[in-house]
Each structure stands twice: as C-alpha cells, then as structure tokens.
Length: 172
Picture (cartoon, rainbow, N blue to C red):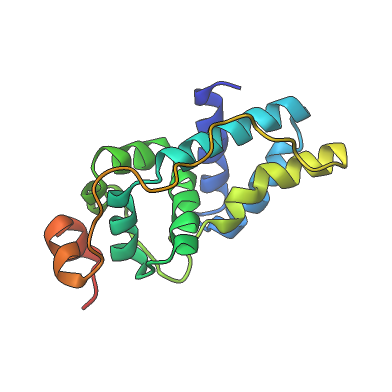
C-alpha cells in the first residue's frame, strides 16, 4: 500500500462517517478487513509513522487550544483524530499548527479531537482477518520527548503562539 492509497482509505471513511471519528473507525475496520493481512499491516505502518511524526510540542499546544486537554493520552487521541482528518489537514497542521484555524470547517468538542478508536482500527482488522494480534510493525519507537521547542500550555502562551487558532477556537 502506498501513501496515496492510505490517504484514500482515510478520506473515504471520514466522508462516509460524516466526520464522526467513532463511526469512521468502524468504517475503517470494515474497509481494512476487505484487504489482505499484509496490506492491513502496511496501513498500520503508514498510520503509526504519521502518529509519530505528529509527536511535536507545537501540535500539542494546538491540541490544547482545540480540546482543552493537556495530558499525554488526550494528545495521543488528538493525533489519531488529526490523521483521520485526511492528508490536507494533517500535512497543513504539521506545516503550521496555527493554520488549523483555516483548515477546519468547525470543531465540535463533543466529537472532534478524540480519535482513539482510529488508532486501533488496523489492529482490530488484522486480528479479525488472522485470529492473532498484529506483529510489531518494525518502525522506530516514538521519541521519548515531543520534537521541537516546548510550548507553554497557559492561556497567555497559547494565545500568543496560536493567534488564529486561539481567536477562532480558544475559550471564551
């Protein structure tokens, strides 16, 4: 599976789910079980590589503005959700996290920002296909610390670092 096919699967499931990440995860599993196990592992590698690429302080700060969550778990789920938004949003966020203000049509705190189930979709599909847990993907582990310069998570620091995102989605 190449990168284009990976993103096509992500985009088609997001569109079919109407943007709901839980529905998207279910549709993703349904789509992946139609592939062979090796292709599912390829999808998982693409997903995990992007998940690790997004382990950055600036994205964490943007996630705090959008979700209000500062914990590692909340940021993990945000990164899964960000991948689920598709190539344009994902790559745009990596290029400039404050640009999410213009990339996102809306942000509903009830459903957006938490793509936990998306992170498990390939594993679930692989297990359904083979009856066994997916093997190690052979990718380098996530760095011990997020990449880049740390971002303060207090309101003043976030408003200064992410002015567009703060103006559109910040508290108050």
